[in-house]
Image (cartoon, rainbow, N blue to C red; front, side, top):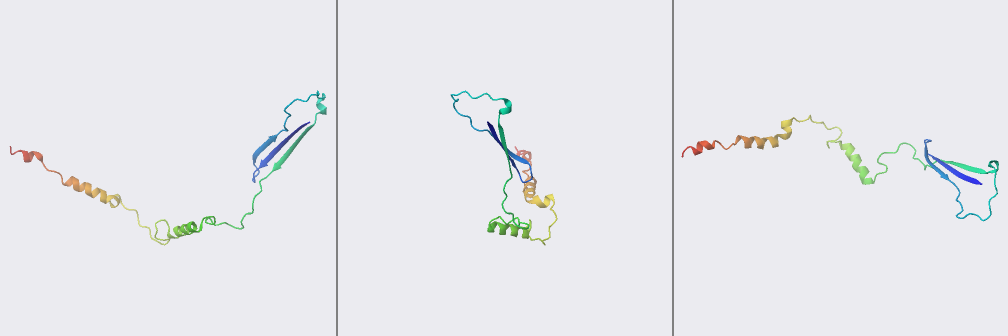
Length: 130
């Protein structure tokens, strides 16, 4: 007698996520008596198929706020950051127009220009007195 078991596991949206195929264990040794000869019609096939879906837990009613699962301090910090906005001036704060290149980098340009303008002078003019 041949008995097999097939288990199909589906996700909640109906797609097949797992397939399990099991066959009974076979004896580790051969029986002493010779088994009777069976014709193909006399063979017994007994397959079983099990279909299972995952069990879902209870869902909250309505929409869950995105900070609902955060610790209290993190939720407060996130709400404060949203209230202040990205620039820290608040939601009603005016955003200033973007600065020009020289307005952003004047502190780096000024020392370079000073160093170039205070050049050493002509060395040949000092050495002509020989």
